[in-house]
Image (tube, rainbow, N blue to C red; front, side, top):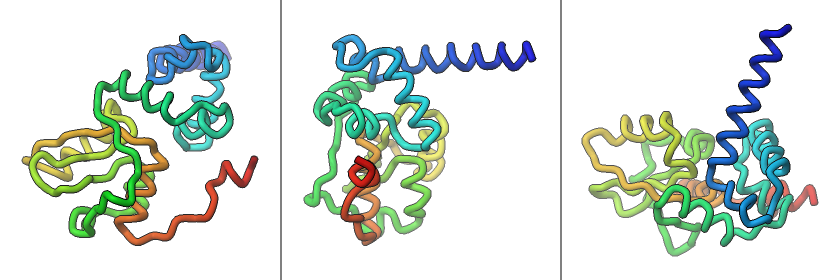
Length: 173
């Protein structure tokens, strides 16, 4: 029993550190959300297997522009939002599975060249970056940040998958 309690304390401490040193800690600093609420968002995101930004936008009314600023400041990378003007050729994603790309939160962007441009939701996730490096061996990689929902829209566009009318949060509200 004491081992379980200790494991929970470690998990709580690790989660608190990750959240309060993460990209959305600035929201607490700017009094847009409380520390407790931000921790709840992270726990919910993990439990629901969705990104924190979606919850922050949909349930807490945090603007995309504010979240984009938090992410670009934290990761120091350029940000790309979905645009119908960006066409990802089927050749670029032909050997990739769309369900896999949606699950892991990244997609290659045009043009297909060196370096390979990758739109990703978390460039500090070591296993994602390792996976990308293994897929694009011997090529330089340049990362760009994006919201998970925009990455999914790029993937759907590249594979010709129709977008649903409303997202799940719009239906639930």
